[in-house]
Length: 291
Ligand code: HBI
Ligand code: FE
Image 1 (cartoon, rainbow, N blue to C red):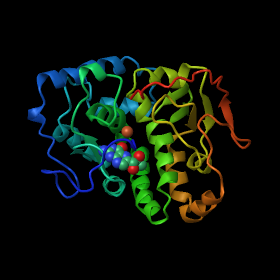
Image 2 (cartoon, rainbow, N blue to C red):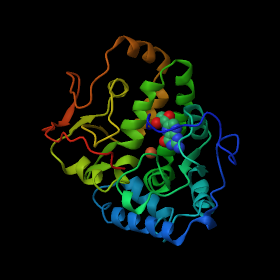
Image 3 (cartoon, rainbow, N blue to C red):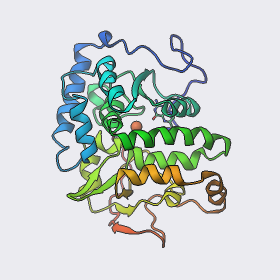
Image 4 (cartoon, rainbow, N blue to C red):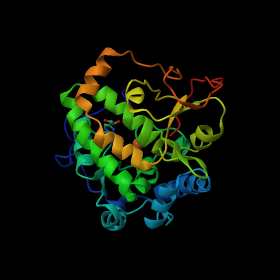
């Protein structure tokens, strides 16, 4: 995800050919389980009125409020039954084709480590808290689960069209930083927001970012920042919209069109945007990414 982060060319020593490893749940120390509990406690309080319904339902059905780092065996028993997804452990970032292949087969990869206590808000690579707390609840939703698989299949195809850059932006602005308009108000479904203490408030309450209605082509032209909170968020009407637009779009001609259009800079608004909240954009700090 982060281009500065080292990615091995082949699976490291001890990993399987598909880059997975044994979670070795018994090997996590009490200290590491407590780190999960600290992060969980802090985020859990944030969720009511902020996280979308599917996320809250997913947390509950997966029993993520149980103390300690979840044992994937228990988690997968419920998740598999619900939507046919599984969580598999990997050492860290995996190559794009490997990542997409797992998604296309309804497997979500999770980093098999947890951040240090002095880095509760800062992460270079996704750890088990970001991957499990942030991503897995949404995978208990049938529509979102299908979207993630469709995304993985599309990801594999995008490599053939040399369009990874465009498709990665779709992941970024939906799966990681997506907002959803629910009847009760604006809510978070993106894992990068929901697993971040600061951004879960910023994304909904701060007056600096723009909140723009979801538009597939627009998103695939949009640059993003990995070192700070987002300045543009994209808002879907419901999860069905994500799945349908992904299934119904013929991406091959779209990629051709995209190659003729300029990229859109972070924080920019274009004429065709349906802007729900115009940001003040006074929030321009160069701080470390908060995950
Ligand atoms: N590897 N472990 C891991 N987690 C990711 O989120 C991830 C990855 N490799 C590649 C990747 N993401 C990107 O291709 C996506 O952002 C599209
Ligand atoms: Fe993520």
